Amino acid sequence: MAISPPYPIPPEAPAPGALRRVRWWQRRAIRVGGLVTLLALSGLVILALVREQTGTEGFLVGLGLAVVPVPLLVAAFRWLDRVEPGPWRNLLFSFSWGACAAALIAIVANSFAIRWIATATADPTSADTLGATVIAPIVEESAKAAAVLLVFLFRRRDFTGIVDGVVIAGVTATGFAFTENILYLGNAFVTDQLSRESGLASVTAATFFVRVVMSPFAHPLFTVLTGIGFGFAAFAADRQRLRRLLLPLTGLLLAMGMHALWNGSAVFGQFGFFTVYAVFMLPVFGLLTWLAVWTRQRELRTIRAELPAYAAAGWLTPPEPYALGSMRARALARDYASYTWGKAAARTVAEYQRYATSLAFLRHRGRRGRAGADFVVRERELLEKLWERREPARPALAYAARATAPVMLPAQYAGYGHPPYGYPQLHPAYGYPTAYENNPYRS
Image (cartoon, rainbow, N blue to C red; front, side, top):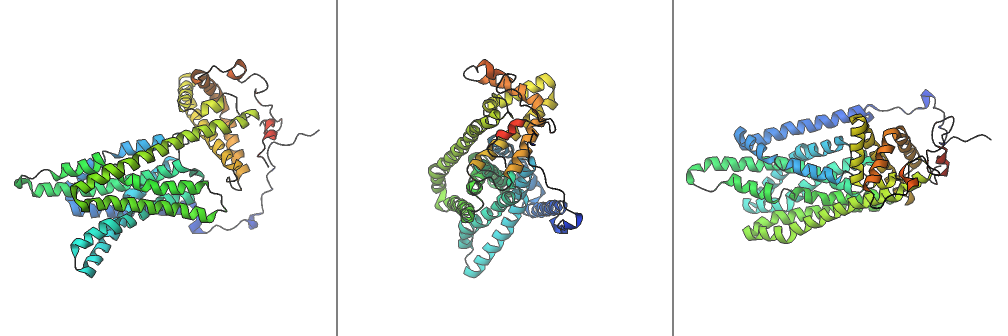
């Protein structure tokens, strides 16, 4: 009796003339080059504009002070994304877009709008107030949301839920706040230089305290609402187009509203600012932080719930779903591999963990009908990547599971040489487990 292959047989390659011709603007190299060029030009223009307003000395002082909260904020978002870390290129793009493109759009559009309103109303004071409370929130949040939209559209495989939306939006807003803080702190330094003889309190110190110490999370907090909207849209099926459109739009409108309230608090004077900060900003910050951490824990529970199906099919060993669903066990497995076999093995274990996490989330979406038409192909890719990295990963995860399990695992689950969950029987022609036949989601 012939044994069927574990995977669907790929179709024959089409004839060369049958392939669709790729236009020059559709080539990946052209798109990447165009994006890099756009960000680089935006960075040069924003650098010139900020330096023109602050002067060289003010720019350097603003740059040195504005960079203080950036590593902390990026590290916080990276920590949140540790369950299924997105590629660094996505974070680099997001930060660059916020610091260069979004900041340039905001400076140009806000300045134009304020000048137009002042000319139309002949009242510069009301133009500044209207610009800060209405124009700036709309322009700035839209410019920052563009980065989230681009990742959502063109890096869809890396954008699977709320955590991804929060991280991309937060890093984009961190870059935007970085450039904005250079401008504000540089101008404050110039003001201090001009008023040195008057004996006034340091404007630079006050600006640093308000923008860097008290509210470094302000811009990330606003834009995270947009990211959450995109995160919920990622859960929607492809056929739910209205939902996929309305959820990000709702998040964007909420971000604009919160931004307008924050900017408008300055109109009410010093007490108005502190009232909005204490009564509104801090509670919302705490709520969104709780939501992000809860979502991360939910992702770990999803891993522990979905991966046992692959352990039963022979692709994973029984201890692995528990070890992969615990951040402590995952870190311990990497440390064990590094100590036993070296840093290369630790990197292999980290890759194994990342692919297993993606597999769990894929199956979770598949059971809810939201995996897309390429579910089988993507599942096969991830299983192959796991199988290629099983040698160092399995003993490392088994060790981590035994060391971190709250209850000692039974003897038959402590290793992976005991039936019925031993190494899966290999297909003689393909070298993959015949247990793949038991997978209910294969085609």
